[in-house]
Length: 270
Ligand SMILES: *[C@@H]1O[C@H](CO)[C@@H](O)[C@H](O)[C@H]1NC(C)=O
Image 1 (cartoon, rainbow, N blue to C red):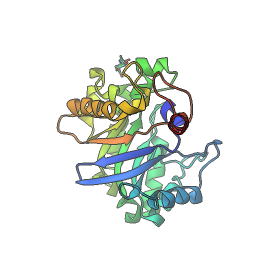
Image 2 (tube, rainbow, N blue to C red):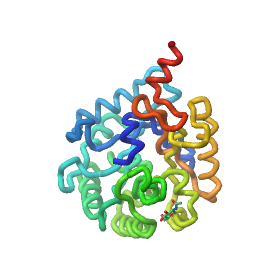
Image 3 (cartoon, helix red, strand yellow):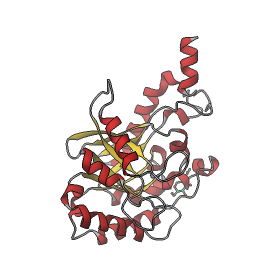
């Protein structure tokens, strides 16, 4: 998993589906628990129910973003999050894992099985399909410096977008808008422009915390957030920009001027 979500397990993600004139609030959810064991239906259900019942939330957190459609440690079984989402009426921004592989056949197979098994109860809740997550970031200069792991170059993502479209052209999922999720500075890198051209929406992950050298203390978080969003908007043309990950780490290492909330809180209380 990439650097940010490792440090930010449980961080809020805001998926803003402007195209549908709908704002969805939700969390990102990986396929495994912190100890790397598989999450099952009951684990996802507990997450979704907790999210929907959050006290003092600015809206209803009734959406989830997944990184893969495959149940952890299975070959190509649909992830059990699908059943939990159907049971709790949770909207889904689905993800196809696109790094470290030369094909997305198993992702396609898992999705096909889910469509066959659950039909419109499943497909009606799917608000978007992301082909890849931070693949371009992991391949970038910063990603390499941060040892973020295996990424994929724009050509690979474009190939997978084609594969996905072909596989679901005559399927209920054909109506689901296709996107790709990456960091804001991957979107503003002109070498990746072909990916912008190929998708229906742009998913941007932006963490002011990691903006070293830019005064990234928490009091500047809002300003840095807006700057990254505006920069992405600036290259997106007419395509909607969805904020797919953000947040501020609770624990972990300091990053230039940024401190995790557990230490910020000590400062505030002290
Ligand atoms: C820009 O994108 C290309 C293609 O994804 C990548 O190889 C390159 O490292 C990126 N540039 C920077 C400065 O990260």
